[in-house]
Image (cartoon, rainbow, N blue to C red; front, side, top):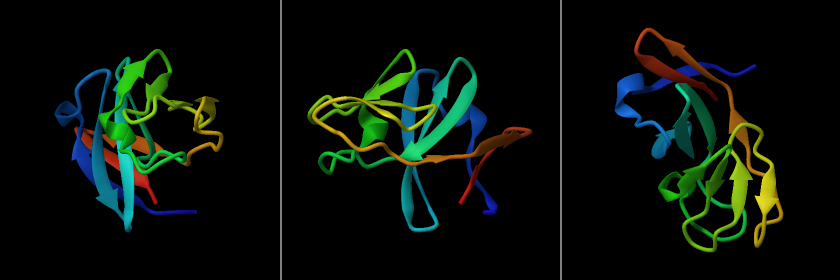
Length: 102
C-alpha cells in the first residue's frame, strides 16, 4: 500500500487536458475528464514522449509523437505503434487538493 501525496490543485487542471507532475521520482500525467482526475505514467511506452502533452479523446490519450493511444482509466495500450500498457495510479481529491498514491 502506497502513500497519498498532494500533487496539484483541482482547479489547476483543465477539463480534457493533461498536466505533468513529478512525485517519488516519477513523471506522472494528470488528466481531467468529466470532472474526474486520472493519473498515468507520463512517458509513452513506445518512445520517449510526454503523454501529458497529448490530446484527450474519449477515454484515450494520444501520444503527441507517434500517435499511439492509451486508455487513461485502465492504462491499456489501445493503438500502435506502442504495444505495452502504461501504469495507472490511484487518485483522490480532498477539498481542492489532488493526491496521488505512490
